[in-house]
Amino acid sequence: MTPDPQMQAILDQMKAAGWKPTHTLSVAEARRAFKSHVAKGASVARTIDRIIPGYGGPLPVRIHWPPGTGPFPALVFFHGGGWVLGDLDSHDVTCRSLTNQAACVMVSVDYRLAPEHKFPAAVEDAYVATRWVADHAAELGMDPARIAVGGASAGGNLATVVSLMARERGGPALVFQLLIYPVTDAALDTPSARAVTSDAYPLNRADMEWFWGHYLRGDADRLDPRASPALAPSLAGLPPALVVTAEIDPLCDEGERYAQALTRAGVATACTRYDGVTHGFVGMEGALDKGRAAVAECARALRRAFGLS
Image (tube, rainbow, N blue to C red; front, side):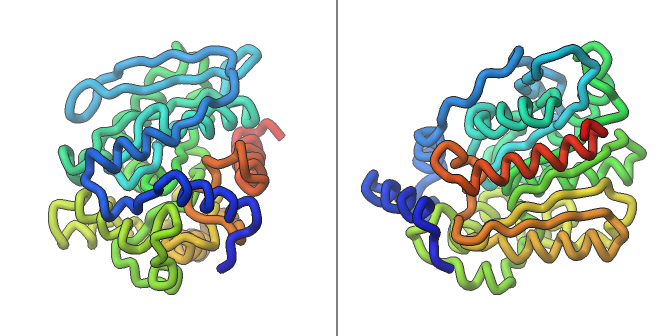
């Protein structure tokens, strides 16, 4: 696992800037560090921030519209950050790029974070937001028959868990799940989880243990499919999926195993590994060719799922 030149340049910049691994920080310190890396995204046709009724109270969302006239397909997006970090700004670059490239309305969800709100708070917020989008699609210029869910890292976990919950709860109907280096199993027993341990990388095994420790109420939650969707009794009947993984990522193998499990369950699933890059590379599209390539691949997959190409 050797970083490609562009990725290595980013790692060198992180080191020069005094990067500290997440697992060595307090929650407050980690949140400040996460916010310090927020970049400005592309322009979209229109954006509003809105508060919707959440499972545990008011739930902020950010809605982006692409150019043109609707009704548009929609992507409900859940940010990464290990269920502990992140907000509506942290993944806005990716959200804006996908809004434009996939020609869809983007609804980004600011779900409740741990440890203040432990599992399953984020899960319930994610499902309630998806249900709200389906129920209010017409007034927002969206097509209720073309709704997808997606997310990065912990957000990818929430996206596929929402897909499972929608199947179990009789809706809403979803046409696609976009899973960008998703968290799928709390066991952390894969070769990549055991191999990616260096504090030089944006995410390593110790960081994942830190995140799981803050997110879950206890070890029993590790076996709950709403936390570890790889443990779901069946994945049959879920929407088609694209799983994107990064070679230098403790989550690489669990994402690919989940893609294989979806395929075995009869779910149309594509999986692409990007070599030489770390966790978080999709959000580095401004400085990383492979980040831009991954965003473009995600947009193409969404467009196909939406019947746009």
